[in-house]
Image (cartoon, rainbow, N blue to C red; front, side, top):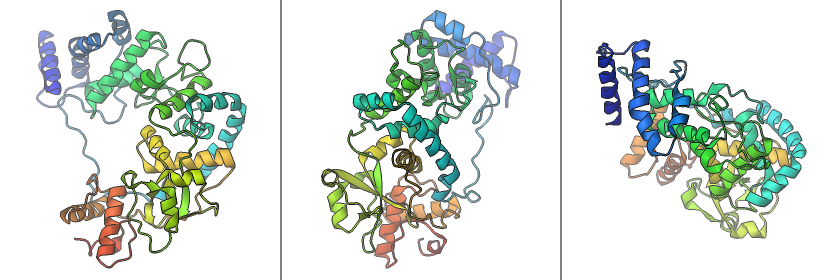
Length: 416
């Protein structure tokens, strides 16, 4: 309904200007006119209700124009571009995510910066309970330790996407949050720089996250995640702490899972005391024992490539890292990078198998077949998340097959 109201208001604005709304896609000039009408008739009343001052709003929005170079735009009168057909799209091997060259570079630079900022990181860990190496790893992954160029006007990006993207409502909320940042005095409109998706500063916070989690850690009275390393690092730590980071625990362990222990036990909803996992024969790949304290604490199995790749027991902190970026592979990347920074360790020891070359449509067919058999596979999207992996492993075991917990071509004719 909101889209319809916006479209009708824009149409009325065009009519007042003597312009007719085109039957199909509008020209850029017509869309720009609709954009200005949307700012005045839709955006301002909503921003005003949330407490944004008119002075800030007018100053911020006066010179804003649409950025037509951004991805995922849906101008009025047009339709979203269809994703590549699943019958053509492949999903890549999980191992492709872990570029050893990139990880080594980040670990080297991260280790050096961890020493440079050791005092700040100690204070951050004392206050928030988050290990310095985790904070530095996220800092490196998100913005190259603050070296990445973040050139876009956040207001322009967010206004463009709030008006004509595939996720208008989300970007509208983020745009209003950005106006509150300006209204609060932490940034001017000109200083409010972000990525092409509207993420801000060195931690790459969306504006709503900035308002909720950014902190002033250098004591200058401003939460500056663009130029202040202490503010940036502490803001990352505060984010993780507020999301539930358990102080005194790491992210997880690479392990070996013996034959006879089902891989179909993964997921955050199947947690057990780590001692229970150990009693089944699961052991740290390093050969070290789990500490007695860890043995009593909860852990979860994670097999991102089934039996074709490295295997893990992760802690609840792993899922806190996923709050930063909702991806198992992202959280594993951060965990591995943090271990390299803190301990000088290397890549995961388990080899990533030759998987990930199937078509998404093939995996989608498997998911649908599993659903028909009563399994919960999570999102039916042609991508093998943990619910798909464990459902597949359970079906394999019940069908007399050796569970691998990962789709492969040999299963296409068997699972129907």
